Each structure stands twice: as C-alpha cells, then as structure tokens.
Image: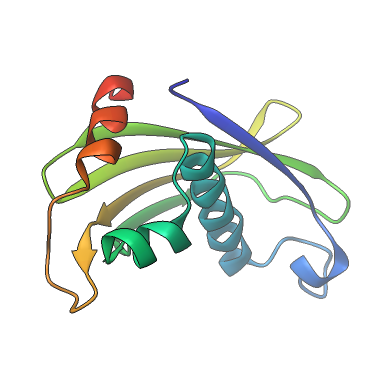
Length: 134
C-alpha cells in the first residue's frame, strides 16, 4: 500500500513539434498521480476541502528529466511517501516507460486551511499516512 502506480498514454497534445513530451506535462502527469494516490488511500481532495477545509498545495518541487517520453508511449507514474510532518509531506514520484526511468520528482506538499495558513493534517489522513511512511 506504500506505492501507487497510475498509467497514462502520451497523446499528440502532450508533445512538442518533435513528438517529445513537453516538459511541463510531466508535472501534470505527476499531479494526477498524486490525486489518484490520495483517492487510493480513501481521500478525495474535493472532500478534504469541503469537509476538512484544507488544501494540499505543492510548495517545493525538484525534477530530474532523465530520458524523453514520446508520442504513444505508455507512462507509469509511481508515487510514494518519503516523509510526513505535522503540516507537510514529501513524496517521490518516478515516471517510467517500459521500466526505463523518464523523470524523477521530489515533491513537498503543505497542508493549509482555506485561508492558506499551515494547519495539521486531519487525524484520519495523518494516521493512514503514518502507517505507510517509508
């Protein structure tokens, strides 16, 4: 339950004129995978916002582009939790194609209230995250 993988096909709209995935689209693939990871754990971001009045924005991101993904590639995004703190977490996401690493992202996520002030994770989410922390 630590890792969650999601797959995405590279479409024409994801590429530049040379048929290579445009660099910003790796961020979109990773964002979608983080959302699915939370959903896999039983937490939808829309419900966290409505029921707990919290948001989970990215506040720091490091990305290494290793190999270019191309049109029609089937990408696998692996998401794992590296570190959990009271009001933030750090995740690693690896984007692969046929077991070849295409990009690696270290993403820091804050937990903030609707006023954009840091706040603790809801207990239910904190407990589950605590169980899967590396």
